[in-house]
Amino acid sequence: MAIISQEPQAHNSSDLDWTGPDDPGCPYNWPLGKRLYMTSIPAFLCVNVSFASSVYTSGTNDISRQFNVSRTESLLGLSLFLWALGIGAIIAAPVSEYYGRRIVYLTTVPIFGLFTLGSGLAQNFVTLIVCRTFAGFFGSAVVSVGGGTNADLWQPTLAGVIYPFYFVSPFLGPAFGPVVGGFLSESKGWRWLQWVILCMVVFNYLYALPQSETYKRTILEKRTQAETGPCVSSTRPFKVTLPSRAILQRILLKPFKMLFVESIVLFMTIYMAFNFAVFYSFFAAFPYIFGPGGHYNFTSGQQGLTFLSIALGCVVGFVVVVYIDRRTYPALETRYGVGKVPPEYRLYGAMVGSTLNPASLFWFGWSANAGTYWASPVVAAVPFAVGNIMVYSSGALYIMNSYGSLHGASALSANSLLRYAFGGAFPLFTVQLFSSLGIGWASSLLGFISIVLVPVPWVLYKYGKRIRAHSQYITVA
Image 1 (cartoon, rainbow, N blue to C red):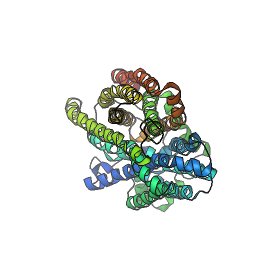
Image 2 (image 1 turned 90 degrees about the horizontal axis):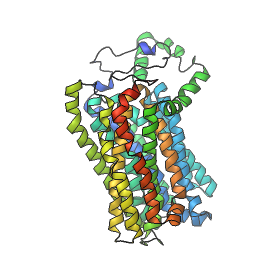
Image 3 (image 1 turned 45 degrees about the vertical axis):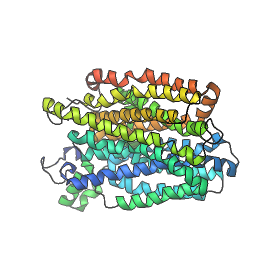
Image 4 (image 1 turned 90 degrees about the vertical axis):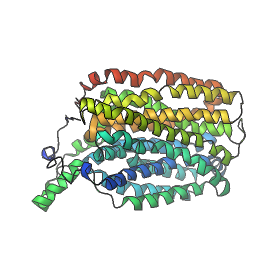
């Protein structure tokens, strides 16, 4: 993959490069076990953070009663958490492209844990949602930086196998949240949901401590310091001499700019954000349909188990994406050469998955509306989860292959911003939408919008090369 940066590089870091293809400092050449360990860190942390987003919904009834707020108000703990995830991603990803990945992980995760602790100890609703908001903000780093870490570690040949392990985590974590939270909130109360999150944080942080730096520029600059002496550190421009205005532009404006001037980022992000929003709307819709007082009147624990269908769909989607990649990519590398396959071929999974989402939404809505046996609407959620994972994994791979490790984290952080903005907004009006239109028509409305968005990966597959030719950040052959 030939990548040409259009941004000015600070100091002489743009002149630094590996000593050769076999340079032991290059993460591509690290032992397989070490690379798998490094890959697992953002995946586990992302499961932790995304689990924290949804498990909260299992305690919203208790929170409503204890703090005397409405059901919609109690969902602010979910929405503000997701909005903060998106805002934090805008900062975390470009920072990782400036200071490296490792320091971002190791500084943000413990702060995420502290605000989770604050959420569990909150004695009023304002304290709870403020702590949830800051927990989401500091948890955002693992969501947005993980894609860049994977780009650092793996050549495109293996990306289609390795990346989905990470890409499935923002969906698998939320899917298991209500499964665990449903029974736990019934027996222990909503505060125990925060203690479970905190236990996961402690484990994952200890697991992540031995990690190494993976970002190329940071590795090479540290190598240069070691070779030329400590005086170099005082001239590192991105720490001292770079003007504050340039830092602000680099950290805050780059993802926004990519979102609005890069057509690939914009259109794939809109599609992925809508799917993500529908995914999170299930965390309001399922309790309305299946929970106590709903159409099926399940207990909270039983209602939580319905999310196993989404977890199953996530796993199936992951397997299908990997299968498609292994069936197609080796032959494409033989045809184009290793590292030279056009990124558009990563969209096969999204093209297949795009057809599953609207079909699933129509099936889910009208089977639940008719009051059919509970298994029908539960199973109907499976193909949506499959299609969602296929679109997200393929779309994120396409973005990362197009923009590479230099700009890919910023591109995905822009993606995260819109995804979590949509994901946080939809649950706030989901119940009103379903109660006003009825389950069938509300779900159908989402299905019709999904149909409108189906052509996105197909159009990018056909015209992506022409679009990339006008990119301000990359030129990929």
